[in-house]
Structures are given as C-alpha cells and as structure tokens.
Amino acid sequence: MGLVSATEMLKKAKAGHYGVAQFNINNLEWTKAILLECEELKAPVILGVSEGAAKYMTGFKTVVAMVSAMVDSLNITVPVALHLDHGTYEGSKAALEAGFSSIMFDGSHYGIEENVEKTKEIVALCHAKGVSVEAEVGGIGGEEDGVVSTGECADPNECAQVAALGVDFLACGIGNIHGKYPANWAGLQFDVLAAIQEKVGDLPLVLHGGSGIPDEQVKKAINLGVSKVNVNTELQLVFAAATRKYIEEGKDQQGKGYDPRKLLNPGFEAIRAGVKDRLTCFGSIGKA
Image (tube, rainbow, N blue to C red; front, top):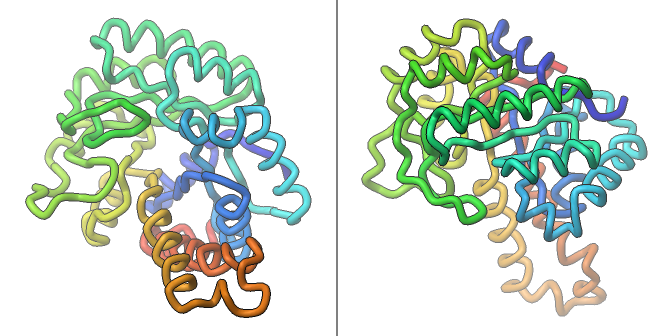
C-alpha cells in the first residue's frame, strides 16, 4: 500500500470518536512489531520518528527506506503514515525531502507570530507534496530531544490562529507531559481541551505524552475531540523490562541465547502486547 498522509485516517477517527495511535520507532524490531500488530488488529497507525531517533538510525533517508520496504515485504494493508515528531524548522524540510508522509513542525517554543509564520511556510511546502502537517501550541511538559517544557496549557485563541493556517491536526498542551508522570501530576485539563475544541471545530487534536495517562482520562480526551494519541515511553519500558527478565533468568547463556534475534525477541513480543493494549484503549481496532 505504501506510506500515506495521516489526514484521512484522523478525519475518520474524529468522526468515529476513536483515537489513532502514534507509536514512536527506534529500530527495526520496534517498527516490525508495531506494523505486524496493527496489521493483525486492522488498526491504522502513525509511526513517529523524533529527530534524535532518526539520527540514531543514520538519517531520514534510512528510516524512509526501512519503513517503506517493511510495509511492502510484510504485506501491510492498513494505512501507515511515517511522521516526523517534534520537528524543527530545518528538520521538517529535510524529512519532507527524504519522503516522510507526515510532518510535525513544533513551533511552540517561538512566540505565536513566529510560530504562525513558520507553520504557514511548512504547510505550503508539505501540502504541495500531499503530506500532512501537525502543529503545536502550548508546551508539552517534560523533555523531548532537548526541548524542555513545564507543560503550560495552550491558549484557545492561539490554537484558532494556527488552525486557520490549514494544518491537518493540532497538538495542544492540556497538562500532558513526556516521559513518566510524577505522583503529584494534576491530570488533564478537560476544560481547556473543550475550549480549544470549540475554537477549532472539526480539526483533529493530538494528545502527546500518552504513556501513563490513566485510560479513563485518555478515553474522555478522545470523546472531547482528540483523534491521535502519541505513545513512546510505555513501549520503551515494556521492552526494557522483558529484555531484563530474559537476561536475569540467564536465558542469554543457554544454547545460542546470546544470538541478538533471540535476545531481542522478548522485547519485540512485549512491544506487540503493548501496542494491542493501547489500540484497545483508543478504540481503533478494526478501523483500518
């Protein structure tokens, strides 16, 4: 089927009141596990790649080549978007050039005028190639690729300004953070989400930092207009735990247990189970 823009799948999610998962990928195992599970469960999926992860995988071109070939080789029939996560201005242009089918330009750390100006330019470049665009207003708490935010809530009027630029979906800070949630976390600010939704109408909204938010809050956010939920930390944690268990049980010492294909397999299976768990929560199984 090849890579697709995320616009259509998120419009359907918005209309159907379910959430499409964005799972961040880090290597071949990650990508394969996510694609196979989403194919089996007939769920559309967005593969997120941060600039740091792309660099780790030797660049945007390598990522595009790997994901495109894998979609083809594994006969994946569900819609798959390859999405730049928290892209810089220059990074967004480079990923677009390399063949990503969806781009997030994160201008949230600029003043609103500069965010609007740069977002407008990225939208024009992406739409000329049929590529979807995600923008961000308000900070998502925590740290991602060196961008640190305390998680300030987005201003609904600023959201309306950015929405008017023709972006395809919008990430807005509503008290969510990247990484593990602290014990004293106040929870999602649903009043802010409702106010933003009122201002942007049918535009699909994005919930970043989806790992660790209680399921009932995620479901409520989806009912209030969130159509895309980002998951990264959660899969990293289950992958690490499964790998640790395998080694602590000494299985890497048995037979050819040190073979990387055997060593990485428990983590691979843990990712698949984690993907199924999240797709169930978001309601996107069978929606491809």
